[in-house]
Image 1: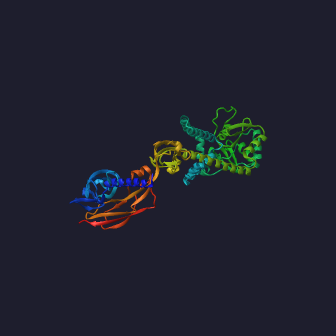
Image 2: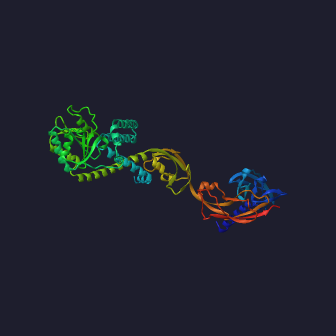
Image 3: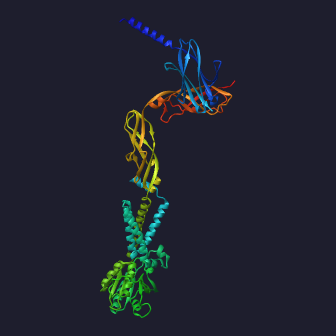
Length: 131
Length: 475
């Protein structure tokens, strides 16, 4: 086989892989943990929340969404998964959020892992619930 | 052995030494007061019984030990009742020093022996009854009564005049001591022996009686038959010529008064040492020998051969040991004196059960194990790996209502953590020590220590991380 043939085959595979990967691609623009969502916008984003706030939101904004896909907001309390929320993304730009209710027993360190539908980690948000 | 001696002797206090010395002196005084008497022989028997009792107790002969104890108790009463007269005689002595500190080494001088022997056989020929007391090491005062103080140099004429006269002194005994006739007309205790020959009269009984209770030698001259008898050590026998008497008296008194005196002091010193040794032995038997029980919480030491795996956890890592042994040693030992080790042979990660037996435990000598609780431990082995983990601040407290902590930066944001693979797989964050939010009212930077599981360590020598936070007022 000629050297050019190797290059052609490799290029073909690369293009195919790029197209496949691009099919699931999107860009995370913003990821915030906040107390409220007002008019589709996060309010009082913070890294420390009082449990008296009762609710905590995780707001994410994506850009360059090629096609409809899913992401997950995985809520961990002290390294233990307590909620896995599936959220839809629609092209071209999409903002979405998840919410959990908190009680006094939820005081401690939290993290939210934003992962794609294949389980790849996109971003991690960290916060604490205090008194 | 050295360790045991160290433990035993390191626990001896000044009080203990005083205890031993006081009791040694008491024993020594008992020897001084009672040596040569029947009480002394009874006490020797009592000591032998006590030794037998301790030996049977030590060897675990429970019944023999109890019976011996009973016999000792009864024997004590028997001695007190049976020798009440002798005991009273000792306790009623006029000089308190005789009981507590005085050691009497006074006796007739050899130069006087000739006079005594001549007098005895002169009296014998004349069939004049006589009773002559020559004390041994111990004073005869506790055992005799009455008498008139003479305190005169020994002479044949004086002795003969005492016994030959019809005066009040001729019926009693004379006491020869320090080359002098100390007393005359002394009343001696009578022997209660029933198997004496019929021809032995009261004088012979008196001679024998005194020889039974102390180490004195008593010469008795029979008034009826003119025979000379010697009573010593509870025995009485007849003497036929002055050579025999000379021999016996020399044997009783020694070669010379001076050498005898030196010998006595050496002998008493030897006895004092023996008393000290006996009391020390008994003291150690009582104090070190008394068994007791104790419980100690001993940490488990793990020894592993393989370097492939590490010990992640030991459950439990403290074992409760119930021990038995000498009370004093048990009181002085701590968990540091006991090694409890487990040799881990397994080389693969996993959880293993190991039995704890006496082989795993190294105890001070003389201590035995009664119970091991629990007798089995669980050891978790795992491979050691490194994992890069993000650091998260563990905020606590009550956040002021008017502020928001909008952003936090931790430096370094991630740290390399070394530890068991299984544990690291289950961890995805390393938390800081708790940081209070109560007093935060403006942006700032703080240093915080990391909170790590004891089996984990950091690859980098990072003690603290920097936490930079931004505070905003609520709108």
